[in-house]
Length: 184
Image 1 (cartoon, one colour):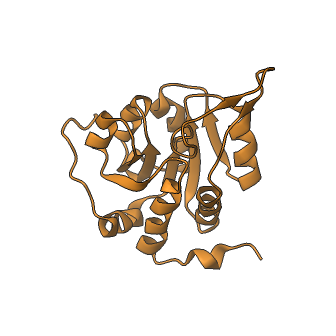
Image 2 (cartoon, helix red, strand yellow):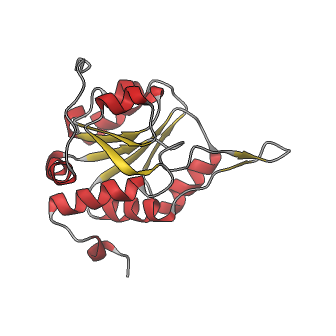
């Protein structure tokens, strides 16, 4: 699918919710989206990241409700693997700068097209995938170039509830109550 060349028209929260009716997979970048764009390194190279609990909780609920959720990060991180395993996120793709090529095998496996993907990013590396998906989203504070092509820019920043904000629109748009998916 060719890249979109013009600046996109921004959607309202209600329009984002409605668009989720055609979305089968939510792809999420990590650094700057699920985190505040900070990485902590110990003297021995041990890496720490701060993840937003509500973002993770809503990713888990969305997955339990039937939405496929994938992590798509250009940077390989043991901390990311550990957090996604803790959340039960089935698709953690890391370590490849070209995110479109990284996600294509998963889409083929799941029988999903790029038009059925929503993607949340924040940085220049996210532009190529954002240009090709059905619902490109940038978190508040993202690079201007990504914001220009995103259909929606969150009010909340990465690592500060931006993913939960988007998933609240998902639940509203598909007419599901997130409380129904809280594990008993």
